[in-house]
Amino acid sequence: MRSIAFERRTNTPKWLRIAVPMFGIAIALVLGAMLLAWTGHATTGTYRQILHRGFTDPGTFATTLVAATPLLFTGLTAAIAYRMGVFNIGGEGQLFIGAMFASFVGLGLGSAPTVVVVASMILAGAVGGSLWASIAAVLRDRFRCNEIITTLMLNYLAGILIQYLIFSSHSYWRELTGTGALFPQGRMLSERAQWPNPHIGGTPVPFGFIVGISFAVLIFVLLRSTRFGYRVRVIADAPAAAKYAGINARRTTFAVLALSGAMAGIGGASDVGDFRHTLDPKGLQQAGYGYTGIVVAALGRLNPIAVVFVAILMGGLNTAGLALQGPDFPAGLVGTLQGLLLFCTLGGEGLARYRIVIRRRAGSASRSAAPRSSSPRSAASPTEAPGLATGEVGG
Image (tube, rainbow, N blue to C red; front, side, top):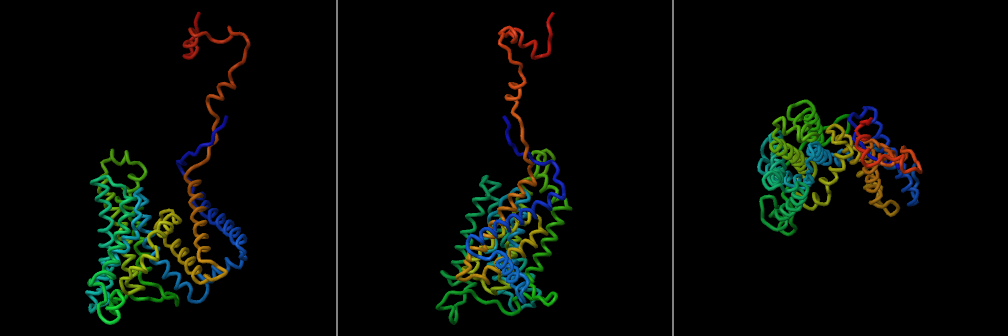
């Protein structure tokens, strides 16, 4: 009998690393076309509309970059942690806390020069997200708590906290005059605290997106060309070897989670400084940036540079989905297409890491090779079996 097994590839060819994701995207497009045809939509026309509404129509690419900016930061959040095998599901909550810290600084330094305010908000967001992620790091280190559960639960705590600051208290973040006294809302940042919006090639680009690209390059270099990145790779690939080499896994894990949370926190600072200009609990919680960032990191194969392009792709799909949403085009259809893209790409990733091997079971092979005879004397007697098994011959 034959059995099918999966063996991990010891060396993956470069062409396969490129071909497999492209093949996964092609399969996702084919499955998406089948879904569109089944729901009564013209396949070619729908894909053309998604391309135009998300990327090529005048002004749409700027909207796509707005949607891509928070996904870039939360994608980096997941990619950094997952590269070491640490499952940080808490990008959502870390982004909330980063937004809270950044808005606090932005409100307090509203009269300072814009450069000072923006730099302080970025730093504050990084500190807030890092501190929130460090809670999970401490629980993992001291009490062996699973970081998947702790980071997930911390998301809910962060959401409750920012809800309390705006809707259930007279906090520093809440507007207490005018309409804010009747309808709870956050205080607006001054113009000096609002982040600049530079134009590149005639397209307005969120300043946070530029910051995100800069951090993606820095993280790529950090993980690829430094001792810290080497320790991360060794701990991820061979924990026993890392322990034998004297690498402090606890300290490295703590640093990875802190850096991961800092990226989400800067994403929260960008949300406040670039777009909302206030701490908006409902808007942040409805967006779901943290969970979508996990998808972005997975599609980017945990590569910080690839995360930039995947964030733009996902931002374009979100923009197109909102533009096409209507009676004939349900909102969930674009989300389903995104899910197919994730499923097919991750399936291809599995084939890139493992190969299928067909084996013949040893028992069945030996039985088929053994000679058949009706004479009982042709078989080895119990006393002869040990000698035959060890290759010994008597006489």
